[in-house]
Image (cartoon, rainbow, N blue to C red; front, side, top):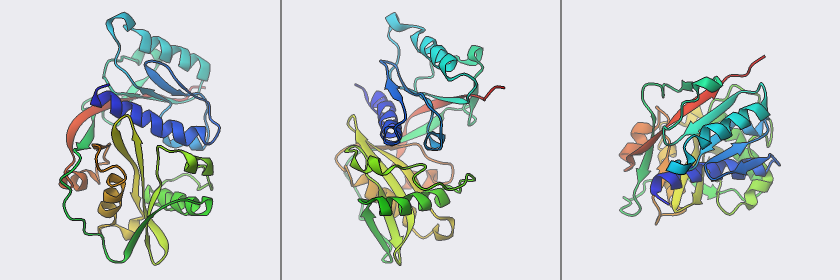
Length: 257
């Protein structure tokens, strides 16, 4: 398995771990990971992730599988994360989104090792989440940090059963006991995928995002760390040693009447 495929599969492992904890039907084929139900938990994940590039004997199989998936999901909105830019889903009613019709979304990598001295703000205490009660604190802070416009629903995003998943770790940073920053490192396929980095707006620009990212990296410091940056956080990650590695495109099929 090459490093790009490892990143794609890591993305699927993250979504799969989160959604299976909610009892959502998720499936793997040789080429795709797919989510077969909709709900509160699925709102922050893509329905389809490509996890392998087609071989010559598989040409067209990915689109055929997505076509079958679309037919099964009926009129629901569907998003596809296309890691190999091999797909043309316009005949199925999809459009490229996130400006990936012009430029693919960047995915960054930081090689293992050579970590500079960490400067964690003295008032910030970083730890892992091990109880359902602490997971609710994590989730609420994440909801605020992402400035979600959706109503907050306890355990809507993160089910307590996911605490038992060996691939992922919930990390929090606290100030005066309050969770103000969050992160989810997911270790699989030889990479450490960094997800869920968020800081409550009024606590930003204090070094907390940098500190929680270092904590996530240090869950598996001997592996390359990979992430998809937001526009706001991309300069921070590059300053931490992350650099361009690969990219992906996003397809969206809107809900139909």
